[in-house]
Amino acid sequence: MIVLMAALFITMLINVPIAFSIGISALIYIFFTEAAPLTLIAQRMVVGVDSFPLLAIPLFLIAGSLMAEADMTPRIMRFASSLVGRIPGGLAIVMVISCMLFGAISGSGVADVVAIGSLLLPIMKRSGYDSGFSASLLGCSGALGTIIPPSIVMVILGVTTGISIGKLFLGGIIPGIITGASLMILSYIFAVKKGYETGEKFSLKNVLLSFKDALLALLTPLIIIGGIISGVFTPTEAAVAAVAYALFLGIFVYRNLEISRLPGLILSTVETSASILLIIASASLFGWVLAAEQIPQRFADIFLSLTNNYYMILLLINLMLLFLGIFMETIAIIIIMVPVLMPIIKLLGMDPVHFGVMLAVNLAIGANTPPVGVDLLAACRIGEIALEDASRYVIFFVGAMIMALIVIVLFPPLVVFIPNHFMTK
Image (cartoon, rainbow, N blue to C red; front, side, top):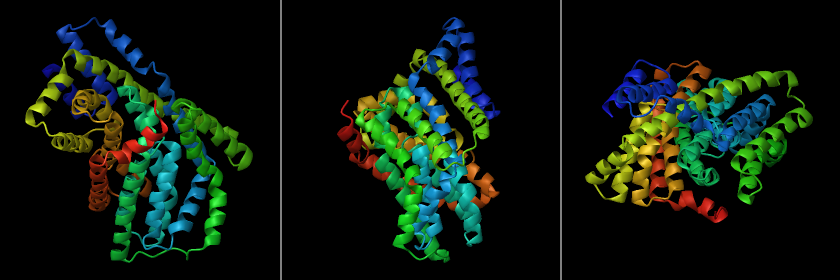
């Protein structure tokens, strides 16, 4: 165990990519302990990615790219602006709502940040919003794509744990809305305090016109979730439907998706998907080593030796996840910690869907905690803002997300009601 963990942390410390850190540490363990033949390495890595649901990852990524390329993002933003633009901090609230709606298409926090930020950040700057405020809100709002279905993180979590991906998707709906609402409330408070200007006067006519313009794009999450709930689609098949629908809208309805752009979009998706799948392949080998060392069982014994109280154990788990989020990437936390935590969750009798959504919210928070918060870093790059400027504000938005996390942890029906009601299997 010492050899394994030492190799892992040393490789991560010297900035070796996480996929190689995980794989190299497992390789060193097997080589020095002779716990298994070296052929096991290739075998476990192949088994790790030999999973049909993993096809949903590149498919949801390409669906989000197609939607953005077909200029559906501005339509969504105009609709959100027509609803709340007049409220103090209206542009900030538009950012949150737009990220929630686009997150229900792309499934990716970083994709949310790029698609929404590239359009809204310049407008917010011209309207007098502090750049650090805008970037930190963008990072946290984009991270809602980790919680709101169809979340790529939940696909990976479902494959890793065996939890129903469909139930995880449905379980993320209410928590995603709660977390988004917490960001909107805080944005309103900041706007009132700093005197940020409001947008155009509310007009029902503008709402109806912008809704009509955005309707077909807004139908995408309904197709995905409706298909899963009705049993027409599996999550992977829903991803195929999302791609087909995005192509249909871009080419035949809006007619602004150029066929010549498709190879570049596909190549970009392949590159992103390959990096994710390499991590998963390495993690399969790492998970075998963890099981061989009985680390999950030992970890469970340590936790239960500290306290038997259900909520105290959940508090310890959440504190640990929030701490790891400061230093580790989202997928790395899933790969390394979920196999360790699942035995504890089973002993507690916690609903696995509740645990999965709780973990997703933790990961959304971690994606905005410096120095490794990928969503916050992406927001700063798009806005050409120093991380230090955004960090002055992000602590408040992360605090709002933590408050939402506490509500989600304390009230499990907020997570499990929809999946238990609509998916009995």
